[in-house]
Image 1: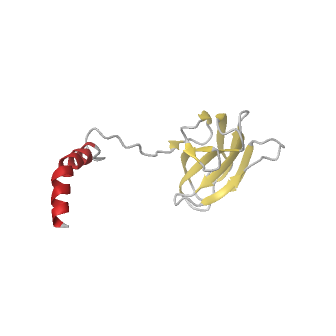
Image 2 (image 1 turned 90 degrees about the vertical axis):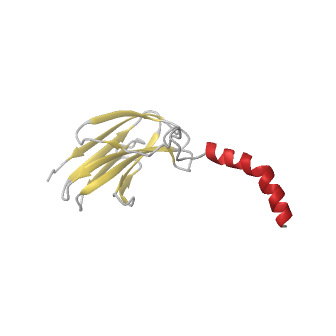
Image 3 (image 1 turned 120 degrees about the vertical axis):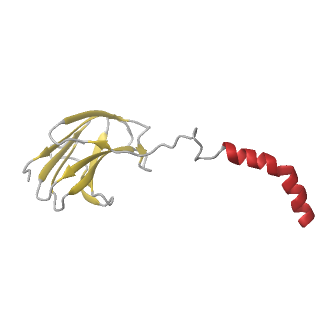
Length: 149
């Protein structure tokens, strides 16, 4: 067995070492993509496009996250509309738990309208997601503070 190891290591050590060195993720030339949600300011419309380059949901759709700071006691409306896909909107706490969600708004369309009250001051994520067969397209997102604190 030691003879096999000696032959193996002398035959393959240099090619393996070169392969490992060239694939080093910590080298200066390696680029690592880091996920960063998009900052959002309440009261401003966001016109954006969900695409196949966004977060895959595992259910055929895609999602994009926006981050916003909110104060305890604030009441807000999150309005998500698209003519291209069936929308779902989520409000996520900083630990990733779902605070609230809405699939279809009260107007009978597939647009989403979510009303909620913030109980804890912090940074929240608003996740825009597609549902159904069409997984991408243009959308408008608006977050309105109804009762700012």
